[in-house]
Length: 505
Image 1 (cartoon, rainbow, N blue to C red):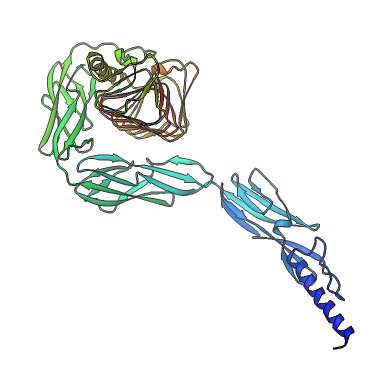
Image 2: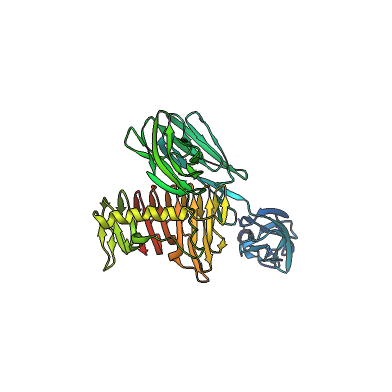
């Protein structure tokens, strides 16, 4: 081959390779380097894609910038462009063209490259539900017993909201496990069922199994009560099953009064005095029943002043009190500043100097009795707020008062109590706080005058900060991992479970 011709061919090949490499790397801002003997391609336009897009608050949309040249080529210059939103209050955009919705509205995403600019329109809609969670995911419980499920929605903007009260529920096998509005499941007959919660287009599932056990006996508490005419008393029925397990069974009980001229009782176990005298209050499930006594007196004692907190009497000396069993995590960081009392203790918790642990004796017995007296006091207060359903107190700021709820009480986020006086929160069902929740006191609110009186079980979420005294008549109290009770008490006539908790009465 002629050497000059070979050399010319080689230079052309090198030129073509260089042009290809420049094209792959973006080709420069203003133009494209020429191939030997070919004029340079220049930048003609920039186009942003997609031209229009829609996202929810918190969701993202990837925009791209494409550069067009005089030779008809097109190059992705997204990473080399300068991106800016017209309104950062509606949406933001990063250096890679990834936009994120901030608030509802419409804005444009502008890309600048090589002296050219282009834009795409972005419409941001209100936050939508990104996912739904139904907990607990697996439940095993007894025939006739009830359990409370929780439904939590996570939105596209990252907010987490308890939607238990508003979700729609269904059971695949209602003959075994039924589920009602509010997420309460009931064991109907032995068997299993898939449970579904639906909310705002999203669904979540859980599994529940009803075990083949029978009710052996029914216990009604308190065993006796004295009320004035017009006064009320909340009775609780607890079933003991053939496997020696126990359960709170509000939905399965049939309540009766032996003397309705003296006292009447509703299907939720609340008895009301009618005339002076005595009556037997009976709770029955099938062929099994239990009973308690009520005495109605003529006297109508004045209610305590609104500013008076619940008098705990000797129970006030205890930071933790459990009528049946106290379980504390071994090797954890639990520290109790105050007396501890329970007849059965698994790993007695660590206590601050000067505190005493009582496992038997008159002091423990008196404190447990005084706890029941205090609960009767709290339940006898007139309600300032009376609500028939569930309530999430998170995000609210409340003044002193007596707050009565027929459904479950939950605290998601921060509950603020503002003002001096007594705060009493009563629920016919459960008390639950979510992880990282907080009870805050401002404006002279005093934890010594804050009382929580659930009929059902109490569960405090992990890493939460709680204030006030929890007074459990006959249901368990569980403090989540690293939960702190500053100026608070955990007092129950039943079981208490602790896990790396710091409690200061």
